[in-house]
Image (cartoon, helix red, strand yellow):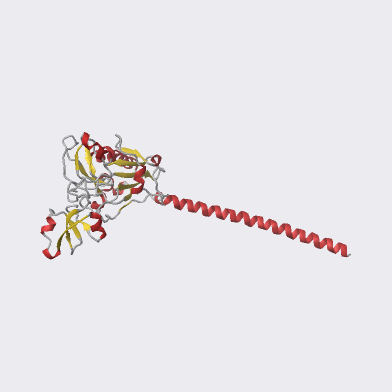
Length: 330
């Protein structure tokens, strides 16, 4: 009788062990699945934060004759959340401490496109602005007030309080040969289909340069998942035959002697008024915390007790809490 009882007990113990092991296996599988889910989520978040900034300009080759090049195999880096809605909007980043435009994004549809001709924009002088002519440049003027998002797309002109945030100093070449083809393509698509396009434009500045080295443009049509419009490009802010100092916006005609500065034009600092130490003469307003070129009209309007002449670098003044005058763009 005892032997039978012992056998029954052993059989029951074995069954319990099998059930327990099966349960452990089930929990292990569940744990593995949960871990996989977390890994997937982490990867997605990492990808969504991968945006283009000035540091990534290093991967863009120097200008070699093409007004624009593709980035990331021409695939924009929008997130699924950004592409999920076809509701029109437009957002413009604030000017930075140097008075430079930052980035703009818009979901563009017919409902926000302009129906009238563009108004004046001449009241804005973007960072690095110079009024200079070269006879061989189309229209003669080297620089244009270039919209980051074209007027034909969102209707931003002098009547909009977004204008300053949507303009950069760009060469005629970048405006017409670089940006315009993509702007026209996007406009024609929206007008012909009635669909929406997610559009982002970001000027790329190196260090504290006042002139951007180029503009990064991305766009993707929403309703057809990018079948109609999809591009990710970098447009070079250059002008053939002209050497540009991106630190100030100064320029001069290309010659054999200027080959060296031309090849490194996006990083060159050739302002003749700058001393070997990199310092300049500025007039600061201790009341408004602005700094100006000595020739700026605002200097004459500044009270004597608030006016002070200094010999420092732009970076030093900005670090001291001063901001550049938008009138003279020092």
